[in-house]
Picture: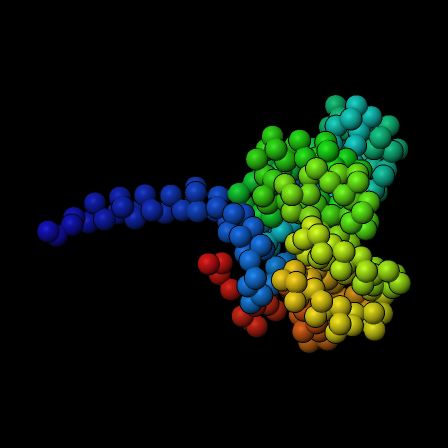
Length: 305
């Protein structure tokens, strides 16, 4: 039976609408599955404070921009207001990023909502400070989220994750040994995706990594090192053999031994290339567009299965 042109047109429109409305909704689920898998052929791009180059840092608009760009995860920061509400803000104060002044903890949520965010040039915009709930709903189904500065509010954060049904797409983290995390918030460790931050200059770094591996309490390790001599092959092998992932920040030199985003502007091989060659499959960057382009050309950021 020959199908009519109008019928085919309707089918095409339906398929297009379906994928525009629902196709992106399962992207976070696919990313989460990939994150938990042993597949190391795909390198995740994490946009630091979301896409702050094109929108105010930690804003809903920056999250949307990072998603549109193709980032796999956005890193955002959590603070608590005077009336115990969780908002997205990096600094303890609002001076640098808004047209207000003072500590976040001295402002109520309603008062903070009267302020406007500044962009990267310090110009006041029309955009507002989002709550954690608003940010998670913006990201829901579309992109993974890494919550920084949230450890002290772990239990309260978990309730927001549960309410928004985003537990499986959020990575929690802390710069603490396993014993401390287990004592303080152990009841959540088998429910959330958790990643310890490890400073490799710490003489206990290897022991910290091995204890998390022994307890199977980490999906990845965020490795921080001011000199690349600290990132030894033994550490890389220990993490890889345990089927855990390595997260490296390309943000600035003292986080990655000098293999930073700034170096990438002149020498991609010595920056992003070095980071990938040394085992990272999660890279947090201030230049997501540049990193995405590099990884795609190297076929390290192909379409998700």
